Image (cartoon, rainbow, N blue to C red; front, side, top):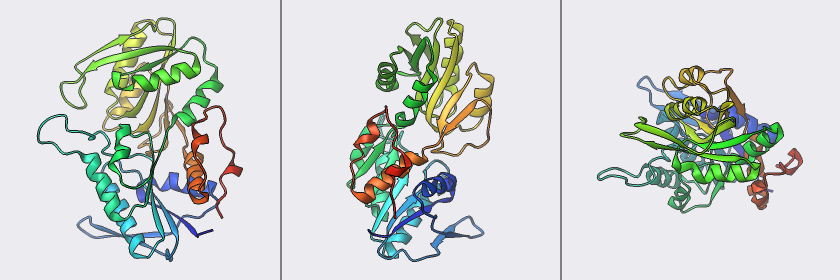
Length: 321
């Protein structure tokens, strides 16, 4: 079997260390020299020649996180790595997936081009904001879903009078899938935005009275939508309101707003490290999910079993030598 190396960017060091531990690997040591003007230069402290190198880095702001990933991939390519696999738990810029008005870029496509140009042979990511972004790449993309963690977690809780709600119409399909799997009711939020990160109006479609409602979304950025939906659902007579979110961007005052809202709990993954902890936010780790995929890529095994929500693979299913 070809030698495997797992490296981490600084923004995702904690989750990369967890993934490496599950894979019975040690992270490759990476030194980063920073110049006085903020420019930086990463370098590997061991040989990568002929190795399959997995580089873990989420590309949330600042843009230095994306640049660091590109630098590390380019360094691995120039160090004669056999394969370079970019492991991107949170694929930033995914909200820029189309031209929705004149004279704007398609940022997600540009980032895909940059990753390919830097030497990516494969991309492993989770819950892209838009599924069609997979088509922006000319290399294989393993697109994972946090539902692999969220659905078993909810099923174990055995919540009575459960209602799954989407805070906007864009998440209707995801919410409907959760509701069907959990045999729960469904509610949809209809919102209008005058501009990004600003909500004009919000209406709740569906009966939430006397229900334990869980709002479902892929990204919480400013938390404006999720908090407004939670407060409105509470006013409509819900027993409780919680939320599940894959990527906790949580910019500016988002955590403070969550703490002040009617949300009892927000369940997220560690695709993005929390800026600070709070009792209202519960974190589920994606380490085993990504370690399983890495093991499957190395062994050329199918990852189809990852979409069977009733059974989670044991650690024995993640062999990496």
